[in-house]
Length: 301
Figure 1: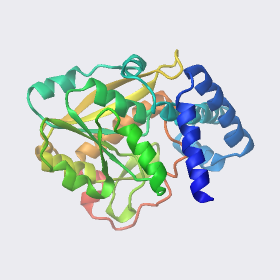
Figure 2: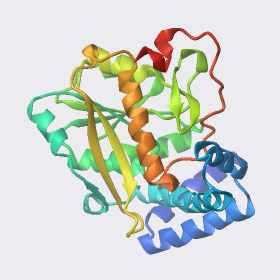
Figure 3: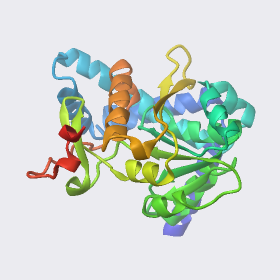
């Protein structure tokens, strides 16, 4: 019975992916109504995160951001399913991203480390990168627990040549030689083990940050860039992005400065477009431990 429902679910995903964009967004609106308005999915988490992040906002403003987030959240779900059948031409048309800085480093035969957050449709940008960029795309990700759905989504993510790397193999894969320069991409706004994290202030709260980004950057000693994916507010399903150079010499950068720069850039983008971030994630489920070494604190910088 389980196999039957899994097979049925995959057929549904494949069928949805072949729908027009107009029908994709109609389904997104229906799904948003069902899981948020009716099901109240993680509503307490979303509202708590927003209230703590924007303590000066009144309740009306908080509710307005939450409403926009719910729509954005389901849009990303259905856009990601649509990626199963999206063409190269559609990808290039839907993302406005100046990649001149990446082309510059490719011509210099340099690998890059790119850090980002769960901002905009990061899955669409992954495919865009594998179509548009000369670098080999290498993306660090968390595996799904269901092997069948893991295979389905991995096939979507890699259909234009992206190499997917799990968190546990990130460091070893980062050092692996490839036949052309590569971009090592890490989404670095999740909740790490508190005792091992770098702790800073982010959206008015004590926040732990994965330290692996700096470890990988220093071992590769490759330029590190921050990447943002923002919504095109005039056109649903279209995005614009940009890159900011954090450092060209990670080994010479002060301890934690790469992490602090990334989290600062991400905070600015969230404040600018708050509905565009993943507020349903339990980002602050851990509290900062006491008596952390200075190497894991903001004061180190």
